[in-house]
Image (cartoon, rainbow, N blue to C red; front, side, top):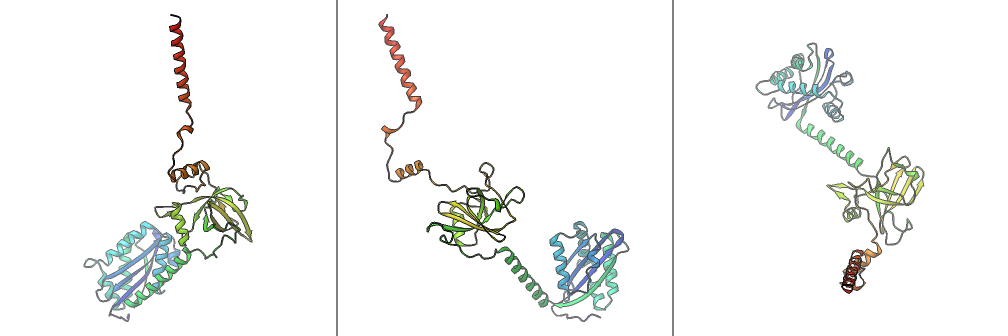
Length: 344
């Protein structure tokens, strides 16, 4: 007979099933509140491969069983329709007032596990289509605080793993003097835009070639230049065209220095196996930030003139070809008219 902790505790039903005739196999876990005798949560995963049954014994701790089911669903390693149909039958089994949840709870309390197994087999015949289905069940009683503590600890570990995977390894800040650039130069950490199929191997990059890079937003300076260059759209960092300044090698790592704009440089460190996407101005028009250009001398002069409040001298304004031809035409007409009057 199961030893119950009836105060603020749960009966955890861990089970596995196999329906050989229909090739249906799976795991399930059910959390029943000992006070209300209702199901707080149930979850399962089903497959057409027997390994899910053969490799998982329901005697394992409930937390391990729950994590296996969650991981298989996350990876997509299950039969979607079969899992959905069996989950619907489990929900019917424990439906308050109309299901047989109370019979399951009483069977567990009295230690009649065979009766509990028979009830599960009865409800799983329809979704699996196999009257010879076999179910194995074990019971575990845990308090609500134990469940909360284990789930909270698992969530914290998963969050740390995700954070660790999402953050790039810290790299030392590189100064302009280290890279032999002008003192006023700004050096940003960037990521090369890669193209595994059509890209150019990093070891073949040449000085002056145009490639695409993304400015790192991990620092405030990086975020500042992303905003300055309009290199983001809809919370997505846009690639920025850049010119290769030099490529240096150390072991299997290549350091690529690029020029993004006047006094703005980017540095990236990558493995020797990557292929870099070259910038094609005619093809890469969408989802690419506008290139940063030096102002043309004429444009700079015009801008400077406008800034100090001057206007171009109209006498020096070149005359258009159309106006010249018009004046010649008028002169010809006048000459013809004069000749006509002279000979009348």
